[in-house]
Image 1 (cartoon, rainbow, N blue to C red):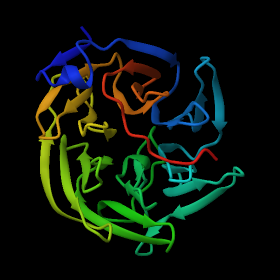
Image 2: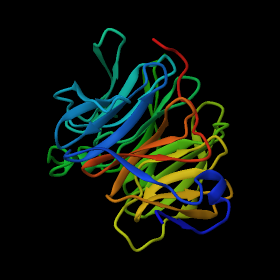
Image 3: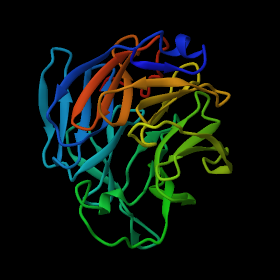
Length: 299
């Protein structure tokens, strides 16, 4: 079996098993998958390869951007424009409809960001991203000393052009996602192997942080990409593959994947295809409960 079932609720979210289909391979290190609901394609990053690629349902892989400034996490904003975290430049950027690139964030308090990593967009258009130091390390980025003495999580307001530090006490913040009602923000810490949850305040700030769950398992893998499905189940990469938690933080089980997982995204028309970036490959797993559509406009 490709799954470990720890709680019977896993069957409703994923199924009794999970067939892992390899869609493509031979990459350096894949990350940041995002499905375009109207154009029907998947964009994903290859950080060490300094390239972003596009996968289409006919099985073709095309170059989408090269060089990519060692892009990592991606998300679509509410207008269907791609926002991207760049390791090599320590920037957050937005790709406009004409293909031009707008720089959204580069510095905090006069100092260069570490290396923006993962990114999400709230329904009001505000952008949240994590800023660990992985992009200043060999292979995953450009080796250089950080200017900031902490690794934080930020909120960027595109309307005001304002960047706000939300929290700075993580070791290496990485994946982040909202609960379906956006009242909670989940953030994982790669080195501490746990997930913290925060209350989201009316002004977009966060408070009342507490450890929500810890990843367990004896296989290779780390806390990295993280998202919730339409029923509030939380999926997160971890030892062995993708771990699934119920809304009450109970560990439901694991989808085992052949390579170390970095991230994933729900796609296709029914939002039940889990596209997984894992080391050198791109995989697909069909699940029972759909994900959540992240943006509203076709273009």
